[in-house]
Image (cartoon, rainbow, N blue to C red):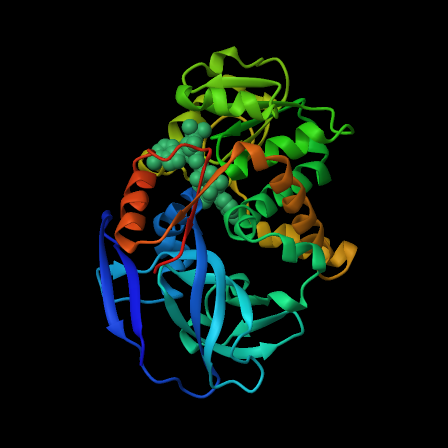
Length: 362
Ligand SMILES: NC(=O)c1ccc[n+]([C@@H]2O[C@H](COP(=O)([O-])OP(=O)(O)OC[C@H]3O[C@@H](n4cnc5c(N)ncnc54)[C@H](OP(=O)(O)O)[C@@H]3O)[C@@H](O)[C@H]2O)c1
């Protein structure tokens, strides 16, 4: 028996959290107990809470209502095993709760990953049931640790959006407008487009006034626009819009400003989660469409062969992580109550974009 510490969030009021301490339960057949070595916290995790009911994020690690466990990306080590395949001492990477330990059920096992087979998780998006076995992975990945949790899930998404836009010749746009460009997913996309000499498009990043300096320093935008100043964007050039902010007001303003010149409108995130509401579907310009990363992965798996797109996305993520090393300050948090404070700050937009939050509960 060991002591389990979990940080849970009230699903009806995200600002309210509780720290739960309990004794671990004995393992069943095929189960493993993992100690969570480190996990990352970014706005993406806030989005997991916001879209938790719609996509099912609350159901990977259920909790007693009205509380829920927000999933995070991180590393863990196997400390107890009832599996014939995954042994004590193995290191894994994947979707975890904000806790010091958890239990997984080992399903199909491959050289470099295994699938969780917990019955109630089988109806949820499969992507998050996959756990990487880190020693079976390409060597270059072994050199990335904090980046792997903090940046890779976001930069891999940046790559998939970049690939989707490029695959469609940017829908004929001459500029790509990125909402909440100071977010890691946002500036990752901006950098990939900006660094691509073949991409004949300008990158226009939109952000809050306090984040302009950070974005300008990254040097990934041809134009940086503060929210409210969207009139400064050239409305005579076709534009593709990628929205990380989920701010319906901003989306509607850009659609009305560009009309038919808004040739694609791609909804990716909801950093401005409090401004979130249903976007008017009758807006001028291209229909706002949710970006579904698995669809682009499936398409590329057919065209390029299984796993190639993920390998490319990982290489892109590693490159972006190297490129921003000096611009990101990684903080190591060790207390559950401190993590709860940062979670609340994240909800209230009080975490500067150059802060990278890594957590390990002591
Ligand atoms: N669909 C997918 O597959 C997928 C995958 C990965 C990420 N995403 C989404 O991409 C978005 C960015 O995630 P991230 O983890 O990269 O973000 P991040 O680096 O934590 O983003 C920080 C930035 O987000 C904005 N922000 C944060 N909290 C806010 C708040 N409470 N109110 C208003 N603005 C706030 C601010 O940017 P500005 O001042 O520039 O607005 C802030 O600088 C998230 O919504 C995430 O869910 C989606």
